[in-house]
Amino acid sequence: MRFVPSLSLALTALAGGLLYLTVGGLGFPLDDSWIHQVYGRNLALLGQWAFIPGQPSAASTSPLYTTLLALGYALCLDYAFWTHGLGLLALVGLGLVGARLGQRLAEPLRGVGWWAGLALVTTWHMLWAGTAGMETALFALLTLALVEQTFALLETPTDGRALGWGALAALTTLARPEGSVLALLSGLVLLWGWSGLRWRALALMATCSLLILSPYLALNYSLTGGLLPNTADAKFAQHAPLLALPYGLRWLDLVLAILAGGHVLLVLALPLYMRRVAQRIREDRRAWACLLPLAWTIALVGLYAARLPAAYQHGRYVMPALPALITLGVVGLAWGLHWGRGSLIGRVLGRALALATALSMAYFLFMGAEVRRVDVAIIQSEMIESALWIRDNLPDEALLAAHDIGALGYFAPRSALLDIAGLISPEVIPFVRDGDAMWAWLQDRGAQYLVAFPDQLPHANPADPRLCLLYANPDSMARRVGQAPMAVYRLDWQAQCAP
Image 1 (tube, rainbow, N blue to C red):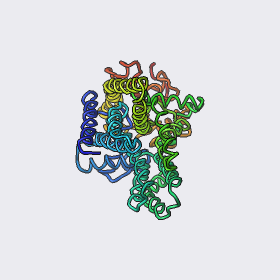
Image 2: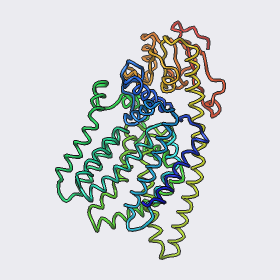
Image 3: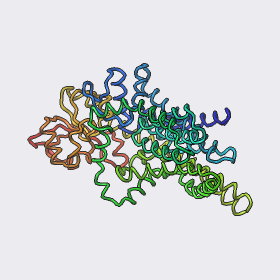
Image 4: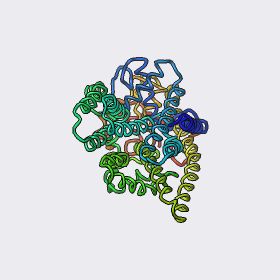
């Protein structure tokens, strides 16, 4: 892309991100964001991959993102400035790489890439992700970059591009474990599209990826006995009841979560994109690679529907499927407008869809800023305020149990902490949904206090006589939106707490 269009995309991405930060503040809309902060701080200041100093653990799902956060702490930068700076840069990169990929897919039409980039940086899910203090926007950027590098390597399999592909595949996997799925799909596309096996390129790709991945894989193996962090098994166990739902319903819940916005109209243009791909395949079999972005979208949503069908928090687990889908939708819409020029009906329908998409995306862009404001306020009033109360009122040596450990670990760090969600206490994973077993474990470990939302308590029963209520924020944001607030309890193993 030329300088001026690229600059306009970058400024739009920054403006959108700053709008969300201005409306919702510099906090984070997720407690998991604070888990990353704790790991990043401990890595920079103590040189430990640990949530609790001196107790190595594997609860970070994104070692790449955690390492980037650690760099900010090592440079003594304000955590909010550094974290949101990373998010804004990821948004800018997402727009620029999306524009490049969109233009490649739209050839020979001109100017389509800019519109694809603009759609990406004005989609409210992406702006929310870029200001969430999580790895989501970074991962989305890397997935698009890996797809783009796959096309480049398919066209010209040079040593440099092979090494670049290997590095991107590894970094994408280090940003999120499911990045390995895209690496696999991309590798299959290359094997299919090349005229013959390119052994040298394959060797360079594999060697580069393994060299970058091996330290983290070795760390996970030493801590957990497997290649994935604790969070994988813990999340699977927490959401196991959802697997009883029909697969199609789980898949639909995830799709509806990420398509809740004006960009849903771009899905209507996907058949037009498929029509164009069919034309290109007849001309060159390598054009099958044009289906890679769609295959990645389907694979990511399908994987989560099968193993972790959690559609809450606006479908954040499958948000990285959106950039590829949006890019294809914009390209399809551009071809629809091109083909429709020859008829009145075609012109009217194409322009109506384009205008409706633009107006609805603009509406949801501003609505998303308000959504983020509420999300951040809930984390502030529940997790952070509870953590500050614990810091000021409970002895540091007291054994505390908690479900959401992020803000607690950041604002009230302690050497004695039990995680009833299993992220840093993986021994609870086999019975994480068994209330009696959880109570027995807490008593056996000598837990003195417990902090959680009511539905996170063993048996989800805040009236249990073992729970003596000590604190719940009187200005709870959760109450304002119709939810029960987080509370801090003293545990009485004689079961004599007043209801």
